[in-house]
Length: 300
Image (cartoon, rainbow, N blue to C red; front, side, top):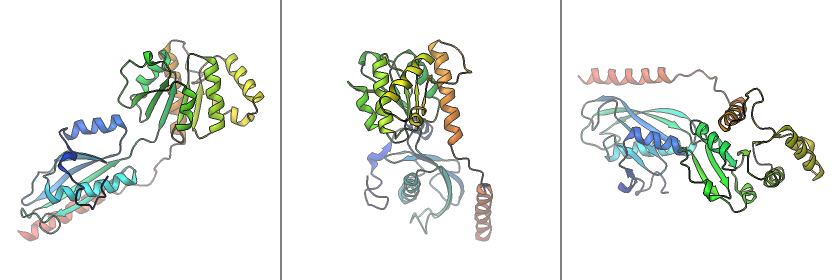
């Protein structure tokens, strides 16, 4: 992709026909980082009024704030935020004549809200009934999900936007290409495959979570077999089996899926950092708007 300062940074082909609201839904479904740019104040002659919005991701822009150098500056700033991949907000005052070289000569204050790409990666080994129920829940959570199986006939159901199928003739081979810190759930149709996946994951050990479906008897047998295979007890204990919260009862696929999703969510948010720093965002907005009003009064 061209660097933000390059001449071909804003090619017309990068502009999408989607409006800003549809673009937000698309970016959220795909888990991509994106920026919402909103005009929050205007003075004088400007190409768009207050409240106008556009959305920018790493490759495309959606809707418009008026085009020209103004939009170039907004997109450039947005892509810099996207590259940092952190949730943040930024206010930018743009004098159109002085900074954007636009003859309309007004002033605009634009707020850029950056939403980071989803870091919560999941891999579901096995596309059976419990998996199909679980993805309906995960479709509403801030994660990206791979459904891995060697049975293409099970990969026909429509998945939520943040989930996709990945066919592997040998699902064990998928372990080595999983992103670091992937959250893994194993519920294949084959106990031998389940065990091979556990061995591969304990050898790889780059994952953040591993859950294995099955009874307590299956869990005990797997622990013994893994110990006999030379794996350390502390490593074996990292595998949650039976997977799911024990207090969430039920054996139907959706009931099991609810139990698994509850465990995934409770563990994920338990380790997620909490931002306790006081926010000065609204004070910053108020101060900037006050400066703009003062400048307007002086001009009159």
